Image (cartoon, rainbow, N blue to C red; front, side):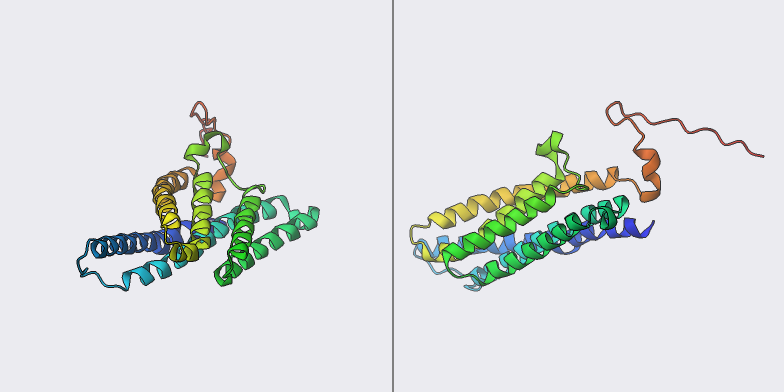
Length: 239
């Protein structure tokens, strides 16, 4: 494997080692938090620790950072590979600088989202963070599989990341809303996000099987992917 192939493994490796176990912990604490709330509402004293709520929130915030960060790593690899391949540093310098600024702005807005207290600023920074991901995802080099968007690792991943950003933005509203409207919205959206993460596991595994090593690309990309055929290699004549 070449260096570019090893760099391509950073995204899936972080997902398997860190993000997916974190998802499991967040779901576990979310379930315990709900069970404790229901038991208390029923008039009994729950044996579940009251710390499950704060732990769920803390791990949820970590999960948002992890998902957005993982998305940025994947986009940086795809875009960076395209920049090097097409030598855009010399032919389209302004475009490369613009892409770099978008990466920096997206990370900055995510950090500010964690610091924001007022609803207006939380909405602003959440919107800017999401917009940064979408803009970066539209750059050349990102494999989107638009014709099969419903089964695309990119579109599922971007949607999951946007849901995580939105969930982070409404956390404070959940604790302040006595009607539990925001809590219900949070629960529904994160159940959808969980299904999307399952889809990410499946589509990510599929894409790893389909992406050739760098030294194989020149041959693999000559294949007819519609008819599932490849050129027959010429037999080597031994001398």
